[in-house]
Length: 107
Image 1: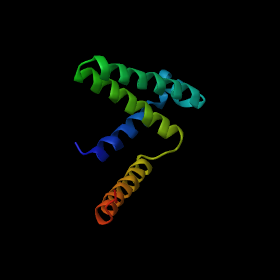
Image 2: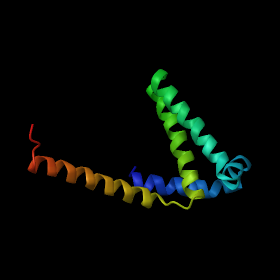
Image 3: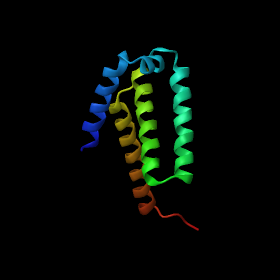
């Protein structure tokens, strides 16, 4: 499945879950609740990547991405904003690489 399509579907799932009690607790409260959850999920990703199977790593990374998407919606950040920023960074990286090849450093 195309990544953009998947992200759009995930946004719809998050919107639909606003009625869920646990979800609304994370979404409607001050950002501290979702930020704490992201901290927990980040730690779980680190532990899984150190000690667990690939399947468990994928599971934990998926949880983290989901919670980041919830935060993005709460903060009114669109996935397009993130994709645009990644595009800018890619251009900067490509520009740095082309500059290095044109102007090799002198040692």
